[in-house]
Length: 119
Image (cartoon, rainbow, N blue to C red):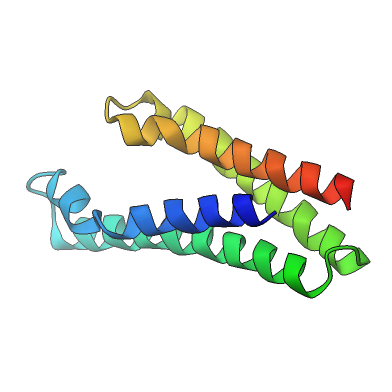
C-alpha cells in the first residue's frame, strides 16, 4: 500500500513541476486555453497525490476495516479509469512520459488491490 502511495504521490509531483513548460509547448493559444491546460495539468497531479495520500492514511489508521476496503476499491476504480483515459489520449503521443501514465495507474491500482486482499 505504501509503495503504491509513494508512486502516486511522486507521479503527481512530477506532473506539477513541468506545468509551465507543457503549456508553452502548445505554442500560440489563447490565454483562456492556457489557463484550462494549466488547471487540468495541476488537477491531475493533485488528484494523484490525493489518492496516494488517502491510501497511505487509510493504511496507517486501519487497513482492515470495511471503510478501508471501500476507500481502496474507490481508488482502484478511479486509477483504472485514469488508465483507460490515458491509453486513448496521452499514450498515443510521442512524449515518452505520457506513455508511462497507464502503467503507473494500473500498477498502483494492482498494488492496492493485492494489498487489500492480503489484509
